[in-house]
Image (cartoon, rainbow, N blue to C red; front, side, top):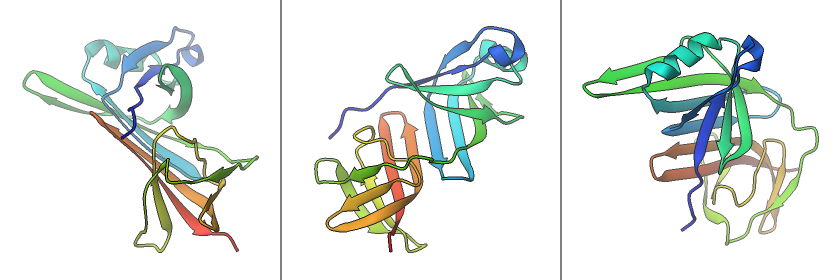
Amino acid sequence: MHEMHTYSAFLSGAEDATSDYSFALTGLSISKRDGILSYYSASAQWDNDLVAAFAARPNGKVHILRDGAAWEYFNQSYPFRYTLGPGSGTITLNGTRQETNTSPASLQLDDSILISSGVDSSGQTTFDIVPGAVDPKPGDSVAYDPITYTIILVKLQVSGSSEKLRINTEVQP
């Protein structure tokens, strides 16, 4: 079992001539692809101050920190979604970012970081790996006993005390 990372975020204010606004995350979902839009979804507890912060920073970006260090960011989409119930509520922030991997890395998978492998409904080989053991990016190559694959999709799901990192790959010719 691996030690779970901590995730937090801040909304940048420089784009709107104001300060950054930090907030805690309750959930996170990232689906990253190379050269096309990647999708991000971050959840936070309902807070009137957070709603006001987003209203004051309509051009801000959501920056995600992993273990206190800058890690990912995305362009927020409007409107953000929310759910309110008796005594609690959640804000869900969705957004996108496009990035091209201009310097692909070569990664090696071994049993110390591999949780499981399989084939999904599209025929792509998937690897569930220990989050944070390596930082795979779409376009990177990954070697696993003795086949080399190209990473097509990187998916991270964080919720409560659960953290899952899956990469979808295709065999390199």
